[in-house]
Length: 443
Image 1 (cartoon, rainbow, N blue to C red):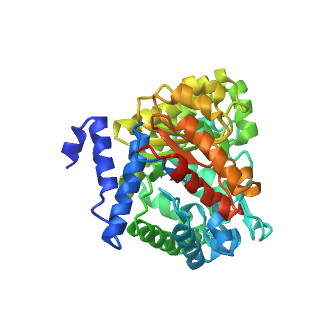
Image 2: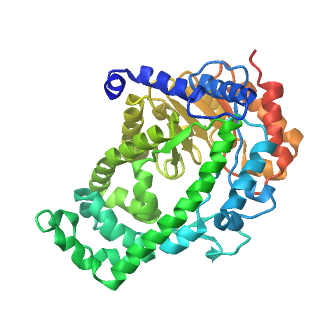
């Protein structure tokens, strides 16, 4: 099978992935009607992604943490009560019509985060009031400005002995481990630091977190399997973020990476080139394991207001494009969520093969995006969270109608929110689907 797969072209690989996704053989559907509905929805999405005209405009509802609040709970509750997490997301699934769904996998386990003493987030019940509806990222220079060489020379060792002890308080003792490359002929050197009680405590914390993670994974998996068996496809099979964001988010922080663009640009670029193959390998593995068709990337720091066009072309796009092209080679499509605005770089991001990407926009002018990208890539997004929170169903439908008329011409468009929501008006979210059914029919 592997030899046959290796001999296929990227287009043939994509076709095979789409075929398996539209008509899966590993799903026990609840009924023939559910199987038919799954195929209709998946075909609709596939046609849009391939820049064809489906039967109507597909819809991705802006889920966020909305299901938790719609079910009468909070983010805090579902982070710690996995049964409630599954119940809330299934309630959302059965009450809201949509063409694809985002399950509860983005709701982290509060217990796992606590067991590891996770330092990159504050969350309800840990640093934030129980009533808060989102996580809060904790900016910091978790990799120092003079540590690029350590990352570049051995990313795995740097992660194990430097990064993890800084971002996971429970694993702080691991900084005392010896480099794995030093034990090739003396493997017992690995055991010596493990004799220390603090290192044993760190390893026990990992074991405890792993057991707790298994409970969370089961709940999330059960929820996703039920939705799929009822006829709901999900095309997100893995993640593949931009290398600039990997370093700017979790390593150097926003302040640090902005300074690095001026003070040590060559080291920054070298580090991004080093981690690019690792991101590609992980993305391919996760998509293959999930049976999905697409790897998603939330692009945090590439927008018009964060960096200039020249900086985007120098620091952001080259390694991101390498990831895109490597995934395409494996027949994997890409979803690129462009946070903020991308109006000054639409011509740059157009430079990928036709029909391989979904550009999902937050605040970008959709008419301009359609004009520049419409013959190259499917586009989605731009229904603002503020409108879903404060407006009326009639106003939401009218805004969606305008988007459909401008962006839906000729296909290649998915109606979607510009960002996630938590406590939006349910009737406004329903209005998005109603707009697609009323104004988005092609045939």
